[in-house]
Image (cartoon, rainbow, N blue to C red):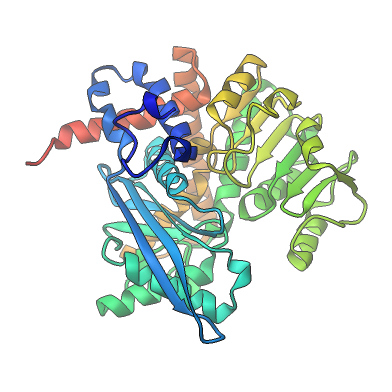
Length: 429
């Protein structure tokens, strides 16, 4: 794969280290023929604007010192400040963070919010740290990346294994270091610190909204739909709850603890309470245990992968028995798997469209912080739904006009917006 992208891979990455970044590069190559004269700028999309790798040393509770590796990648800032989450996970790698930052650029442009793309992470298993160690880790990381973040430069947000408390520590650390309270430096904060109502549920609500729109085009009655969900966190859990409230039947769920199935439908409120109490879906009453690989073979109308990237691959794409896939996670489907799904007539609602609800309400939060005027949740949800519907309608129309997948259509719209801005701004000096 490296030979295919000789000028798009940082010199410090080897051929076997491309990972998710390689998948993203393939996606850009697929959309390039549709960019017209803007294709002369396409290398802009293949090169992150800025990559920061930091050492994050902290004192552990036992008095010893531990070092962790942290990243912050700003992929593109042509359309506005960089925007993207921070994840704490033991498997975080630089190519992964690079790809996630690039997908944020595409996502923000696809729904037309005035942000560029960024992403951050620390390679750590947060379950091994105490609360005080986690706070020290967060504050040290924020200090290390403080030179490139800021309310008008780069705005972090929650991601895998980070939450409102992590954002509060990041905001406080940045504010103390700069000498002034800066609520707009992060989004996904507690409401008391300038967070937005509706932010926690926004990504899942966006998944639900575009799913309903796509189902309408396919003639699928949501009230009759059978659904399987991978991941039951903020994204998958909220989406499952909203689909169930709309009358759909959630028949299977998978998370890190295992997979469960109930043909008559899972009690989603009870399941969410069980997950909150035990940490996983395993051992949920009134459900059968399912082998993890068998999860992908469950007959359903809608499959929602809402966990981590690269979950749907050539190894399982041929076994999926769904009419539609809504990507709640970032990059859950590899390009090769995408081709298999297309050949089988399975509609894929891509991550860069389907899970953009979170960054859309993050934009609302950022705007509210700057104005110090806050909207009620009804207005926020209404604005979110309208933006998601408009974005879906544009993508659907491009897909029909150019006879391409929804993913390619989303990339066409987003890349044209990014590269047009790059062209108009020009190069300096």
